[in-house]
Amino acid sequence: MRTPWLSKVYTTLGTKPQLVFTLILLIKSYLAWFVIFEHSPGMAPLISEIPFIIALFCLIEYFASKRKMVIYLVVNLLLTGIFFAVIMYYKYYGVIVTYHALQQVNQVTAVKNSVFSLLDPYFLFIFTDILLFAYVFFRQRKAEAWKQLNRRSSRRGMLLSVFTLMVVICLMNILPNRASMNERVKAGEMGILNYEAYTIFSSDKVDPVDQSLITQEAINELKGIEPVAPEDAKYHGAAKGKNLIIIQMESFQNFLIDLKVEGQEVTPTMNKLAQEGFYFPHFYQQVGQGNTSDAEFVVNTSYYIPPRGAATMMYVDKALPSLPKLLKAEGYDTATFHTNVVEFWNRGELYSSLGFDRYYDAEFFGEEDVIFFGASDEVLYKKTAEELKRMHDAGQPFYSQVISMTAHHPFTIPYEKDQITLPERYQETFVGDYIRSQNYADRMLGKFIEDLKESGIWEDSLIVIYGDHLGLPIYSLDKEEKDLMAEIHGREYGYTDMINIPLMILGEGVTEPAVFDQLGGQSDLLPTIANLVGISLDDYIHFGQDILNHENNILPQRYYLPSGSLVSSHSLFMPGEGYEDGTQYSLSGDEESTGSVTKDEYNRALKLLHLSDSYVLQLPDKKPAE
Image (tube, rainbow, N blue to C red; front, side, top):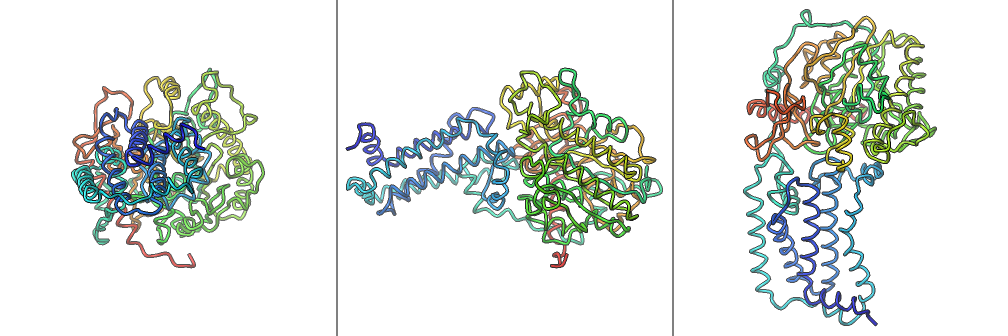
C-alpha cells in the first residue's frame, strides 16, 4: 500500500512527467548559473535552458512506448550530471567543461580529494530528486499503473510542433553567439546545455599555418622584439658548462614571497633565495588542463599548450624539440624526478618525447612518508640529492628537473608536519591549509639546498626555481577565504594575483642579488636558460624570449582564463565576445595605474597561439624507439 505522499508523487509524475522534470531541471540550471556566472541569472536559464529540455522530452513522448519513465529518469540523471560536472569543473579550473575533458577523466579520479574539497554541501541537493525517483521506481516498477505511464502519447502532431519550436529557439540562442571568444560568455549567451551540444557538433579545427611561414622572425615580429646577437646579450654563456637544476614548486604563487602571518615568515627559504639571486616578481603561469605536466612541457619546449586537453595527451606523439635535447647535444646527462607514478598525466610519453635520458618516479622513491599520491617532498629531495651527487661525481654536466608535489591541492598535509602556527581565522580554511603546505614545502626545499651545498653541487650548478601553477583559484574561494586573501594583499585578490608565480635564477659566479621588473612567463625559460648556458637557438623555433635581454612581452593565456586572454607589460586582458567588450586588469592591482592591452596586442597574441598550434602539429611523429 502506498503512503499518501508517495501516491501524490506517483500521480503527478504519471500524469505530467514533462512538467515535473522540466521544473526540476530548471531549478538545477539556476543552481549552476548562480555558481558560474557573476551576475544574477534572472530569466536567462528559463529562456536558454528550458527549450533544450522540452525538445528532449518531446522526443521521449513521441518515440517512447516502452520504458518511457525509465528514459525520463535516465535523461534527468544525464542532464543533472552535466550541470554538476559544469559546476565542479568551473570551481577547479574556472572554465566550462565540455565533452573533450572526458579523455582526462582518469586523471580526475587520481585527484578526487581535490575535487571533494571544492564540493559545497548544497551542491548535492542537485541529486535529491534522483534518490526520490529511484525509490519510487523500485517500489512501483512492477505495478500495472506504472506500466500505463509508458504509453506513447496520442498528441503526436502537437509534440512535433512543440519540438520544432524549441529547436528553433535553441538555434536562435546558439547561432548568433558562436563568435564569442570567452567560453563562459558563450555559455551564458547560448545556455549551458546548448553550449555543450554546440561543442559536440561544431568543428574547432582551424587550418594550420604553412610550416614554411612559421619562422623565428615572424614570431619575434608578433611579440614585438628584436633579436639580440650573442656577443651583445647580457649574461651570455655566464653558466656555460655548469649543471642545470630546475626546481618546479607545486602550486607556489608569488604572493607568498616575504609574506608574514602574525610575524612568522611563511617561506623563509624562498625569501632568502629572492634576495641572493635573480628574482622575477612579474612572472606568470602558462598552463592548461594538464597543470603540472603542462608546466613541464612549456618550460622544456617554449611552445604553448594545446587549445584543449593536456599537452601530455595531445602533443606527445610528436618528436618535440626540447631543452633536454639541446643540452644532450652539449654533452649533458638529463633526468627528471617526480614521486608520482609516471603514468599520471601520461608523463612516460612526455619524457620520451622531450628526450630525457631517464626519469625517476614512484618506483624509485618508494612509499615512505606518502602524502596524497606520492612520497613527500622530504623524501623527494633527500633521494634526489643522493642521485645528483652520483651524477655529479661521474664528471659529466647534467640537467635535472625536480618536480615537488606535497603542496598539492587540497593542501591538507598532516598537522604533525607543521612548524607554523596560524591564527584562529585561518584554521580549517582553504587559505590556511595552503599556507601550511607551502611552509612545509619551503622548509624541505631549504634542506635540499643545504644538501646541494654540502656535496659541492650548488657551486657547480645553475639553479632555476619557479611555481608550476596557481594554488588558490578565485572561483574556489568562499567569502571568508576571499576576505583572508584581501587581508594578505591589502586589497581584493584578483586574477593577476592568481596566475602570478615567482621565478628565481641562482648560480655562483653567474648571478648577483637583483630584482627584474620585466614581464615573463614559463615559455620564456628555455631561451633565457639557453642564453645563460651559451647554447645557440638559431635552428630552434621558440615562442618565449630571453627575459634577461628583452623588456616587452606578450603572454597568451589558455584554460584557467578564457581563450583570448593575455598578459602584457601592464595589464591582464580577458575578452568578452571579443576585444571591444573585454576587461582590463592592472598587474599592479592599482586600478588607477596606466597602461592596458591594445587590440593589436590581442590580435597578435591570438596569432601566436595559432602559430604554436600549427608548428607543433606539423612536427614529425615520434619514432617508436624514442
